[in-house]
Length: 429
Image 1 (cartoon, rainbow, N blue to C red):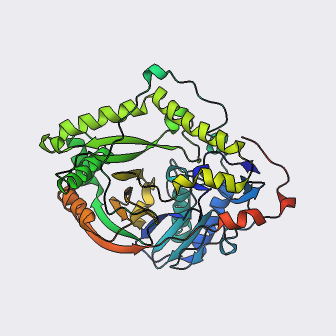
Image 2 (cartoon, rainbow, N blue to C red):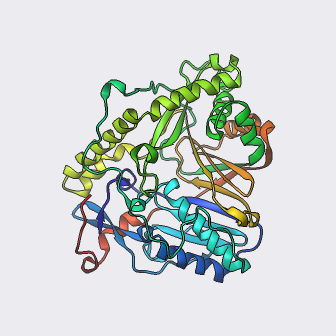
Image 3 (cartoon, rainbow, N blue to C red):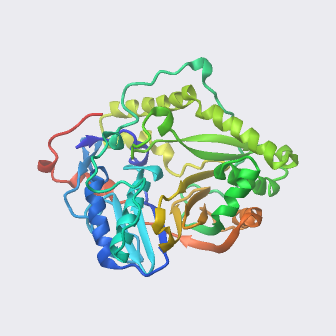
């Protein structure tokens, strides 16, 4: 079994870490046989995702899970790491025309699970419709698995970075008064966009889809807080794989780029703001800055490894529980690679529960971009403002104010009860 490094910030929570979900809405009803065959193929193709959490003497490991993965027909979310999922940290369920892939952030991040989702849909459509589809860019059973897919970004050794070239952003930000630590409920507003129209508008503004969304969201929030003495801050999820030379790893490899927006920016045209955001983002994606950020995480994990007991580690990492990232978080996963079977996919979405503040997730498939506005409070004024801001750029449908509850984490309870005879050999990272 393999000692965990990159996913540790999601493991030492008081109540574990609830599942994150990628949901695919197909145009036809899901057929149980083909989805199980597809899952079985993916189980063999992605052995590094077929793992369970094991805790020994205060240390968490990822160990092979020899229980078969089973696609279950249910509208409920199953608890990852529980007996119901065979202790797996990835679970595939379906109902009506919906497929859900739930995953634990301690195992992988959103970018890390996407190849699994793409392969699952490729095999499902192949078996369901009995056709041969293009597999370009899809990881298939029978291919030699690249060792880079399971490479650890956060080993104990530090990366070299030139401190004189490291950009240190100002993270001063407006705190939304509605944001609550450890809320009892979360809400999701789903905004379904025409992808081509949104992307075209972004290009006209000289922005990527994520930066374009950041401009629209930040301006909407600023208009609701005209008297604020601190900027609206977009905490943009930033993938570090390319800079670290680990583009194929499934491990958690995400940092944050900070993009501030002030009242003065409301008077700027879209292209000027986009250029400013690009400049800030490029400064934070510069190699020395990224490696300095990684080194901070390595330092944290090294200090964590020095502690001897699970309780000590939980106390050290307690600051993650209920953390609110002011003013909001934006995560864009990109587009699912679906080739010529995309016509069977209606739309997709990306969400999790236990949202303390305001989080916006974006994912594209089937010609649609779904923007999920997640929040840990019931006042819909921010979601409504975001909807109004993006409406001119291809809004197709709004599904407002749904109470959201993905499954709680069970792995933090079952990890210490796994049979040691199966996992005697350990691998340090």
